[in-house]
Image 1 (cartoon, protein in one colour):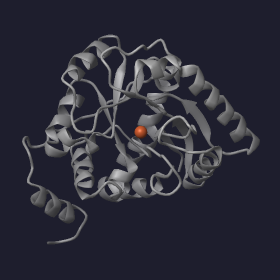
Image 2: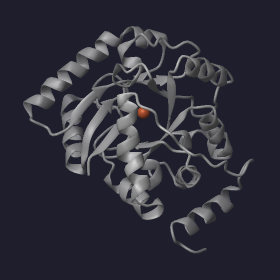
Image 3: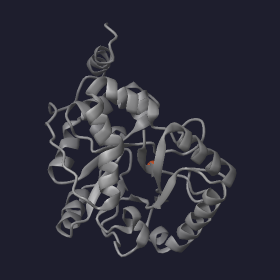
Length: 267
Ligand SMILES: [Fe+2]
């Protein structure tokens, strides 16, 4: 399988991802062995100041290209960023969009609150045909409490990127249940690794791909791990057909029981 990973923290010494070139190269080897054929480096960009320092990121990326070529690694690299939401995003920056395609950008929110200005910012972006890809919505408190909020983003034109680890339980059972709910309602456009290191959050997609194949079928898995990521990188149209989840907060115990049923454990 040839997975395309749209979210990975491979560049060393920039954010909380890879802590050395040794780790970065180990992550890349891991990804290649796991069936990942292309990966986008998406360093955290927390502010306008970080975005203005894109030359540092580009320098690290160029060094990574050289190191990967020297090792003849069978994995193609691209550059982007994971932008922390801010009211004005400078889309003239090369790293602001996937591969500089000026169309799709990866964006994250604070974990505990989704700021009020997000709706207007997204609206303004979409008017200019800059399409937000929301990183790991299943991890945000607001969406954990009410997954219909995720539907609102998709309805307005954003795409959702689920973390592979969320589907496998890396972030706990609540996050896992929410990720499953989002896939049950056809809200996800893509599954990515959000790799940070070699052990806890590795550059791997195969296990999550298998989980999606088993639960939602191989066509859906192909769309989430291969076809949609390829389209996003190429700046092509991506369509989703979302179903609105039940509104309102879900009882955590009920949600957990429902998860156990979903993964085939009766309680
Ligand atoms: Fe990330």
